[in-house]
Image (spheres, helix red, strand yellow):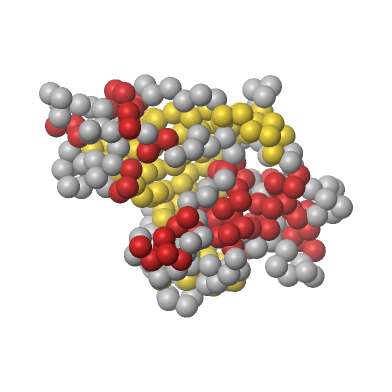
Length: 297
């Protein structure tokens, strides 16, 4: 099979209703390393229900809520799912996420862009996360590179191809970063993060990881996304989670649990609440997340 543009754009997704508890909120924060330093009181609001002001959810937690599952593997999609690659993650936060709630995820395919035969296609899946009373909490966009589906628009008499999302910008190459954050990733980080719902064995089983071409299990891309967000909050927002309003980033290379993540942050000239970012692992001096952009309030 091949991609059928109209079928994918009109594909119905049942609303995904999800209850999460304070324990889930704490576990999400712990999986991202908050609490690694037992003397770091600034981490307590995210991992300890007895913290002054009560428990808070990290602002990137919407990426693990209301998820429709690995639907691209279903036969009717026509997608060569084995060759899928999570390319970018973008998010807009409309309201702070409660520490516990019942939420609903509404998912849809918003863009399919044909890069050409042998060059793949780009698919954007958007999720609007809201409370059961209809309050919109976050809009999440997952940009997926369908490496095996390029050239689909030439089939069936010529199918449409959408304009891509606005391109993310590379960080400045003419000046040093304004802020640098260094954080150690715990060796068991992927085993903790998979409890958020992504149970792909690539992140747990050494044999599966090696069969896929990796020396050992890799960290989830969305875990590294959360780590970069935490770096920004530490360096530029006094760890005030409510200040993060938007975060876009490109996944450039895999991260291994146990490595050290170095996040470099540039303030956008003339825009004091906007920042560009990239992250690399210190041990390999390898850029693993690039073209980052974030906005604070």
